Length: 172
Image 1 (cartoon, rainbow, N blue to C red):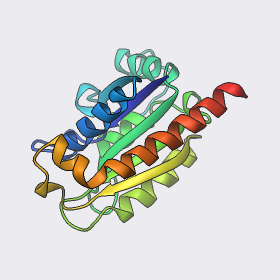
Image 2: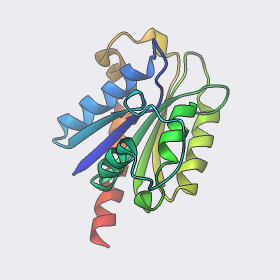
Image 3: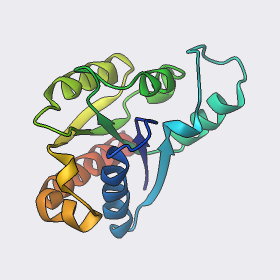
Image 4: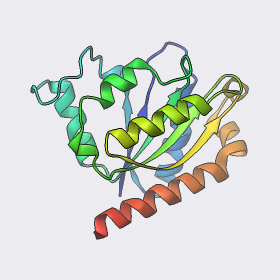
């Protein structure tokens, strides 16, 4: 089973990177093949599909070989980062029925708005959002172990759900 984790911000000093590493480490401990896609590796300024752009074709290969996705995104102005939207919008049909877990990150008590926006985006792109959790007050966490103390059960539930739906997708 192959899961792709998308780190949805390229901002310097991003705390979402710690959360993405927590997700990747947990999934790898389950024996899964995990690919981390960092939006920094996809400096796009367009949303054209199928024009042969090397970055888009690389992303297409990652997505089409994935059984499930997890998107880790901070909340920027009550929504998701623009670079995440640009990356996701480069594909469409490749997402059809792909189960996705959403992990939102906030330095304060936010995260609900970006979760709502991401769910709608995923549905509009044909994905199946099946699980989520929100990391509040992310600045209080200094390591993956710190995150595990507070979010291990939520991560476990997210993993179970995306894997269940990934297996169902293969069986149909």
